[in-house]
Length: 346
Length: 185
Image 1: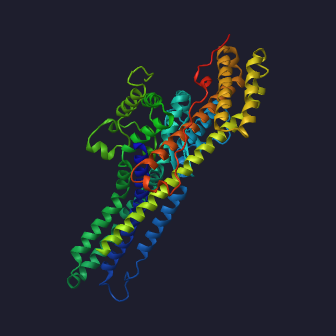
Image 2: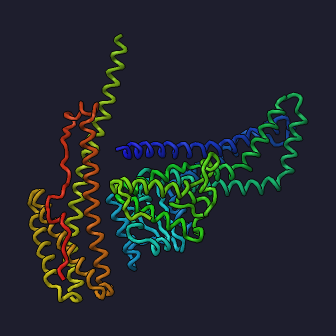
Image 3: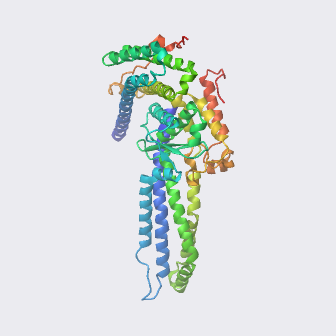
């Protein structure tokens, strides 16, 4: 049962990558903080007796603490933040037939996948889409847009929910939610620093000047300049790098989730039809912010990059081309039918 | 030479522990999936009287169909508390058949479907049947995984120690369940 092997290795990969992401995030902010400290220390080494000498790395400690707190908050509150940013509301007691059907379908897929029932949310958006978020099997959320509920029939809705349960089961949700939350934090920090730098160029000039005055003795000037440049670049590029990281989450996850959906429902044709409908819906899903695009079943921003192949698309696309996903599912359905090709696939 | 033997032994033991644990884990998953089927069957038992009460008014002229469902349900509850697997499978199959006939009858009366209660009845029945089907599917999937793993080399060598016995798959025992229910109009 090759799916079991893929599932297990995918879970492991996600666990490892989540840890690496957290470690890398804290390390990056430590570099920003202690790097700044080192630069300031170098710059004020030769300063006069009464002047400020930067001896204690308070900047590094502060930033590392902030990053650690941001990570803890992202871990604990990441899923809720994603749901909040999408304007989702939770379905606790279904009030109409559509909600009743959704809750039933989620319960059915929880049974079929062997995963505890996740909390169910609806995003008030007319464009059909769905996403899952959470950090482990016991704290998972599945959200669908109102448009999905009205435009898909019961089997198609079931297959989409099964796809999301697949993401929950192989812990994609952990990595992807962490990414979404941390990208938001880095963007905030980057914006803040960019504003500081624009207003604080006088400060920079002074420290460089200070270094030059005592330069001959220290001999650390070229290094100082290099480190300073790298450091400033890090601040400016941090938001861009983090967004690239979010984009680079492997597109292959979607293929695996599609396969898991087919395994849970035993109905790959339904997912093919659902994806077809979702793809051909007119508008992008405006409720999903850029940082959360990779969480959805279909690219909510409707980017043309999604439909391309090749290395650039592999690196920067969040979802694989829809045509290939549908083709793979139809192939599964064809095999299931015993090769008669008479199944009712889109 | 002695060191090499020691390292080899440690490696074998480490592997053995891992294989043993994975067999135990699968065995428990199989037991859990079996319980899940039970849970869904019991849920259906509890659901049927409420659903019948909800549509009795609208479907007075279909009393036979309704009564067949009620008696099949009572039979299933009686057997479920003490019977063996094949008996349980038989009576649950009959209840499934009776419910399918009820659904088929509802399909034949489009006016009926317009009333809110009946629409909900269809949804709840569909969902209940789906849940039982998926519970059985999960059980079969996990049982197959377990059976395969305990027979594969090299895990087969620790299978005896782990007390691994092949788990029976849930098969359709009742021919009536395989048959498509006929609608008598």
